[in-house]
Image (cartoon, rainbow, N blue to C red; front, side):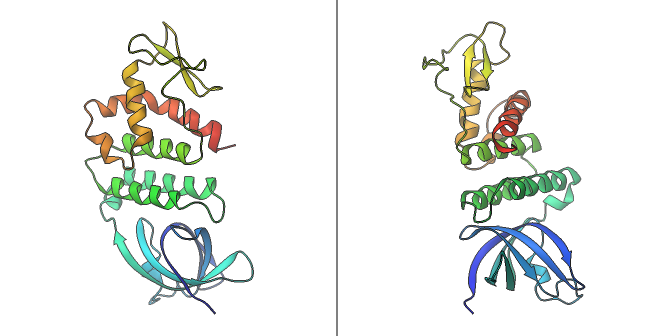
Length: 230
């Protein structure tokens, strides 16, 4: 039977039968797949070390007749040890893994693997505030889904001016001029960087980044819930 090889990030694990586990992983080559990891609950299992959370692993597996594949071998490729030193980092890590698992179909695009890989690198860098990682991650999830907001013009196609205040039109996914709006042009410029950045460390280099992220997090969470959680 043909063995397939790829890199993988474990999204979840659950016990199966007496000694096995079923793991769900995201990969750059085959999207999201579920695998039976036989014997991994045995003390000296050779597979167990390569299916830990918050790591990138090299795996070999074979397809089954149904949706469930079988893990043949696993090897730790990259570990991110700083994550588990902070309970807040661990909680956010679980949140991001769960988000990808819930909001992707089997065989999902490779962009989701790249997204999680960059998120783990960010979580492992204790100099990057959690609020920046969560904002960046949610924005990238929206962008990958094809629902990124219009950050250039309003719903009538007129360019956003450099002065004034704005409100967000969730139906049109764009900003509109409004004297009582809570957002300024600097918020919009910051969002442009957020949606365009391949990694969260870019945000950590911006002056006032955490304050911008705190201001914009409720809005990005709204976009996330409107277009990804339905």
